[in-house]
Length: 323
Ligand code: UFG
Image (cartoon, rainbow, N blue to C red; front, side, top):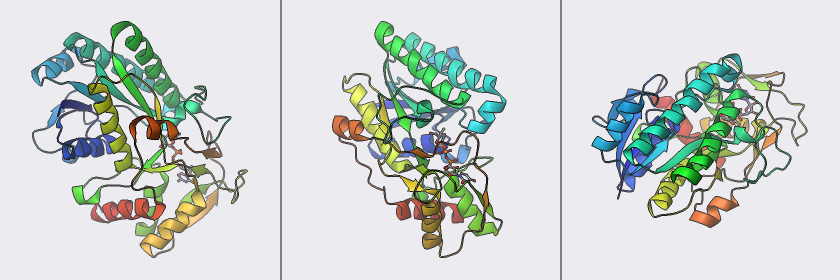
């Protein structure tokens, strides 16, 4: 079992991955600057409040804790914000990642799993999207992920930094028994917004019903956050066992429309979702579904919680405990 540093481990996917690593018997230290994460998502004693850009502090931490591999989540994730302040995304997501990689090289830690995104594909030509679909991001957030993946490829080739970027589709769901779930501020994601509408009675907006899809609403690949977390555990173990660098999509391979998600939320909560129909949101592709065969074949990953009602009911259990 290994000692693993999780950057951004106080955030949504980071906290679930920390939990999955511990369940597998790994020892974890979390580095998070708490700018967007939650202290109570990390067990007492495990958190180091440090920014990934603080290279010297990070190098010291890696050495003192005898870290063997890093799972790197710390980043900003809001597409809209990235179009208002691209510089924030290049500074935090790109320069921050470079500073972290420099600290890793200085400390001799040469294994990293990186939180990338389906946003790197932009509006893909092929759906389901295979990993060799060219990178063509349509916003600075997606570009920031592509830039880090590019750095990783060169650092792998010339510095032996073995790395796996995981390109997530739509992370959702929760681990309510562990008190973990989705808490973004402001919240922009579909399922938590629908659950909030159920709880508050204030309508949410569906962004467009005139897309070229069967019911006119956008199709996405909703992947349970704990299935995502399991993919990180498999990838970090693969690297620790001497496995090579590679990039993988993480999605279920099944698409659901916004209307189908709404139906699932109504089934699970037993209540109507107050909503209005609005115009399309800028930059939303009609359909994003993963071809996830590569990760299944290479590492034997299979999503265990792919059923949409299961995803919604976990998110609902967490949302009810957090109001
Ligand atoms: N949607 C609504 N109303 C809302 C919010 C979302 O109708 O209030 C719709 C969107 O138009 C989209 C779907 O619900 O069709 C999902 O939207 P989310 O905002 O939940 O997720 P995105 O697909 O936009 O974003 C996700 C990740 C991003 C990533 C992006 C592209 O959260 O980090 O996929 O891969 F950049």
